[in-house]
Image (cartoon, rainbow over all chains, first blue to last red; front, side, top):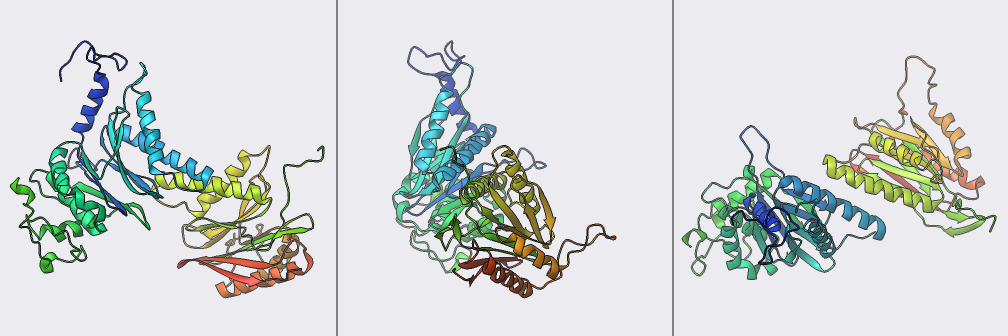
Amino acid sequence: MFRNQYDTDVTTWSPQGRLFQVEYAMEAVKQGSAAIGLRSKTHVVLASVNKAQSELSSHQKKIFKADEHIGVAIAGLTADGRVLSRYMRSECINYSYTYESPLPVGRLVVQLADKAQVCTQRSWKRPYGVGLLVAGLDESGAHLYYNCPSGNYFEYQAFAIGSRSQAAKTYLERRFESFISSSREDLLRDALFALRETLQGEKLKSSICTVAVVGAGEAFHILDNETVQGLIDAFEIVGEEVPATEEGGAADEPAADQSAPAEEVPAPMDI
Amino acid sequence: MANWSPYDNNGGTCVAIAGANYCVIAADTRMSTGYSILTRDYSKICKLADKSVMASSGFQADVRALQKVLAARHSIYQHQHNKQMSCPAMAQLLSNTLYYKRFFPYYAFNVLGGLDNEGKGCVFTYDAVGSYERVGYSAQGSGSTLIMPFLDNQLKSPSPLLLPAKDAVTPLSEPEAIDLVKTCFASATERDIYTGDKLEIMVLNVDGIRCEYMELRKD
């Protein structure tokens, strides 16, 4: 898209009925480093690529815990993401205080969306430049939502946002039908594989990515580096082949005893 | 209507004793109003953090509201600091929270027990508006006047006027402290009508938190 005379204010419509500032905000999300989410019936996994500005600096924090049962991964303007995750934490705490029960994920997501919409209709504000993948578990099951700067939100079985997310989405699109019944380990494996797609050949190691899980009986938490490296090692040994969808045993054990029949599903690199 | 009061006293007694590497917090489970018993099985003890446990007697509605506020504040702290609050930090927070309502106080008489940053037992005792002090042991509630002199006698807390300054921790072993607490409550139950039914004891040490119960007289 190019500069035009309707894109200065968020409160100016274009003749085609577009709000360019909102669309530019969505662009900011596409520029951020990738974040991926997938869910099964009982678990939701979030994974993100953590690029550091330079070797000297620390990594950007892109996954936040909002409550015991909800977490969020962001892509785009991370400062906006931090502010929104603080809002989410506050809403979760207030709901818990009033109702003595966890905030249903769908409710939180609507509140976030309404908050984002306000910024698309005030001349003195700007849209939030961050996309949020909200992962949570409530009475109605495991959920994954995507919140846009536009104020829209959608529920997903699996999704990827940020730069080079299309590669991850292609991988997920091929496999998403099996996710609903995946085990926790398979979900993690698929998340790491999808994440690897966005790296375009760069080696996947735990120092450049963050993985978080929430599930039935398992509070939202970010996996530590050793665990993530263990998972990466477990499937990197399998090599370029796509892992078997049946139970592959403990992810931390070397995959020497795992067979990976990949005849019917082509390896990701081949596409 | 002219005699309506926003407060009520639900009675009960709370005690805490700090050891070298443990802390014992105990409270009876009787909840009363006037001369009636509301329930024989109400817990006055609340775990605020991994190393902080609070026991409160007084108006239980205010106690519950206070516990909720502290729990919410602890959640915020954990999000911001990525760790649990230490017991001394929680002690200060409790004091500030109580004073916040200086002109419509929480009718709660609190005793906070836990392990400090060095792993030693600590007990903090409060009045209704947040004045607090770290001590080796304390009792609050309807039976406190019966229990406190007995604890003073048994635990011989050194005078703060003494030099050199002595530790706030009592040299008692964990089983001895628990036994002392049981003795305190058995005695208080005899003469305080608002104390009785059952005793709930929480013990905090390096292994975590465990809970013990003892039956008390039900009259």
